Image 1: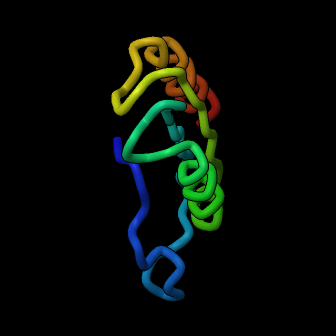
Image 2 (image 1 turned 60 degrees about the horizontal axis):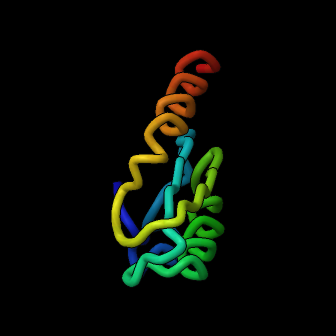
Length: 82
């Protein structure tokens, strides 16, 4: 769980592309990681991840309880599909 990405993410040769799936959960009322930044971060993650899914919830700076069932289903789908 993290909010942003490293400031040097765009530096060529610093980070590698991987077979990683990312579930990125954001909050519409987060005062630290505003939705516009999260969309930009998700796009940046797509440069190096196999897949990136951004899900937004109506809450502040927290991991929303409403996201727990979706997180569970997302993990199960990754385990089932390898």
